[in-house]
Every structure is written in C-alpha cells, then in structure tokens.
Length: 192
Ligand SMILES: Cc1cc2nc3c(=O)[nH]c(=O)nc-3n(C[C@H](O)[C@H](O)[C@H](O)COP(=O)(O)O)c2cc1C
Image (cartoon, rainbow, N blue to C red; front, side, top):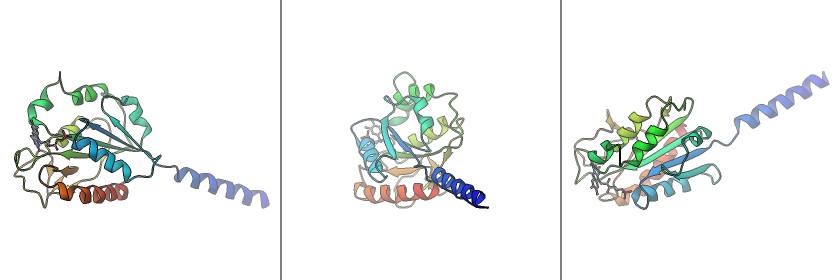
C-alpha cells in the first residue's frame, strides 16, 4: 500500500516536470540592421529570457531548428525580383538547405515588414513565400492577423480576412507597430 502510493507520487512528479519543460522559441530573420531586425529584438524581449534565441538565416544551422518548439520567421518584402533570384537571395539558400527537414509537431509563425502605401498591391507578399517554402516540413502555422486598419489593396499573404502572419509597416504605421507586436506575441502564446 505504502509502496504503491509512493510510486504514484513519483510518477506524478515526473509527469508534471515533463509537462512543464520550458518550451523553446527561435526567431529567425533576414535582413540585418533594419526594421526586421528591430522587430526580432522586440519579439524576443516579450519572452522569458532563456526560452528564446534569435538568429539571422545566415548564422543558424538548419538542423538547429529541430531543437525548438516554436519557430518565428521574420522578413521584409523587397520586390518580387529579390524573392525569385535564387542566386542572390539569402532566403533561397536557407530554404534550399532545409529541404527534407522534418519539423512535424512544431509550431511556426511569420512576421513581415512592408510598405502599404508605395506597394499597395504587394504589401508584405514575402510572408507567403516563406510559408509556401515550409509547406513540406510538417510545421503548423499560427498567428494569423486581421487585415483591418491597413490601407493596402492586395497581398499574396492574405487568406480570407487575415494576413497569414503579423504585417508591420514601419514606413507609415510606425506608431501602431509596438502595440501590434505585443498583441501578436500574446496571440502566439495562446495558440502555441
Ligand atoms: C526596393 C524596395 C522594394 C520594396 N518592395 C516592397 C514590396 O513589394 N512590398 C512591400 O510591402 N514593401 C516593399 N518595400 C518596403 C520594405 O519592405 C519596408 O520598408 C521594410 O520595412 C524594410 O525592412 P528592413 O528595414 O528590415 O529591410 C520595398 C522597399 C524597397 C527599398
């Protein structure tokens, strides 16, 4: 009787410890030194230190991605040509290197920087490129963001009434960005 009770308690403690293992998040972004990088830092500050790592796509080894539970990808849209040029785009070498990677069971989210006034028909198109490139990896995407309060006319990153990730415009809605980032991270934590 005493032994079985003792075993029950040990079992409970082990299970609880396992469930409470700190979930790990990685922010992976490109390019450096601009709005995308600033946003990566802001997102990171909203997680417990020790539970999040931040990498550029040129410094992270793709195998490393398998160590995380939540992967947040960040990029800006700099014209369709840049996305399609497989020789110069760092993103494409990154996508190429992670072919055949199995990320099933993991969660992912995207944030995208853009300019809705100068590029109203291609606002944050880049988010869709990232999502599509990851389509064979088994990742589950969360963090869809409502299209209201933007002035774009079209985007490849819209599905229904939502962007597939967080759309940010530091060129014209800088004052809204901070709040959007905070709210979006709360959303990620609730969906994760
Ligand atoms: C040459 C060029 C092309 C751009 N093309 C687009 C575009 O097609 N769609 C869009 O939403 N934003 C576009 N932008 C705006 C950038 O995505 C935006 O300024 C972003 O904040 C830049 O982020 P970064 O500072 O991290 O590079 C373009 C900017 C430049 C300079």
